[in-house]
Image (cartoon, rainbow, N blue to C red; front, side, top):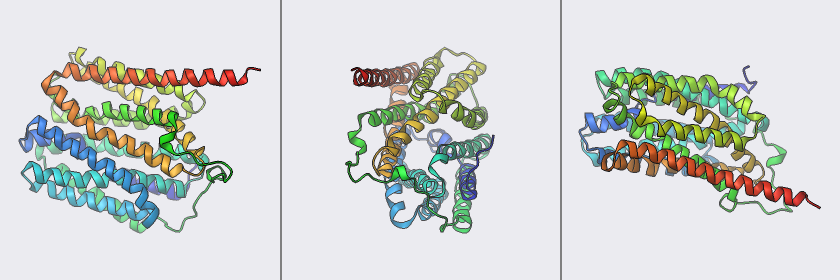
Length: 399
């Protein structure tokens, strides 16, 4: 069943699809830095950490600047800045200049998401925003899946080509926003989003339940980032995959995610969101914990699909709870969503450096078991919070 969304929202999703058709650099960045440029794994990990810092700064700035100059203008600046950095990187040879260019690219990429969210809020009625999020996820995963399939072959032929294609799609996306997106479209404001003057607005960092939800998203993003930080190294050494095969594996994961996100979102809508979130986290934990046990490419594919299934359950449910918290924030929904996006981006700061450090200094097995353990511990923390809340609700109902 296709969601009934405003025409401009479908256009916005199409622009996201075009942009992610060039999503080639990030999955292959660690391979490019270590193999093509010749940097050490530790140095590559530091540069990936710089990428994470740029992403979190961009995520924080993107939402705030959108309120000042308009979210559409932020999208255009984001796309063009990213394209400029991407075109420049293949011409650079030292780690410092590459790190600076990657930081610019990451800042621009980080600003994209809150600006996109702001466009969705403006263009889409409140009761359709969860479906709008699912459409966005479909668009970026189909685009990224096609990109991954092409990227493996392009990288094998000439590593610099992935930067050119990634930058080119960013330029096309910027032109599409400038030419086709209607900036005069009416803004949809739900009554529930208006502040209640008799009740002080809640700030996100004072809402413990919201903080725990952000922590869970941060942990899942942190372990998920290992699929682009350490997993490429692991699958090419332990499983003997070629870059082309690794690109095909990413394509499979993106397409499965894109095909399943809408039905899973509809299914999760009628379920207990916290329970679905916890189940998804446990599936992710099992997937990472079993990575060292597989001995064949077929086993790796199964584990990667299992990881994708866990993420499919986790993200729609956690997003529904986050949006619910934001809707009850007393007019602070923008601050809540900015906080959530920043927390997600924060995972990119520590994940690559920690992942590659553990991978090199300890062992790949230590990394995958660590990813599993931290996911389980976070799930236990969320479950304890759920039990405390349930107990408090029952006590409040007792005479």
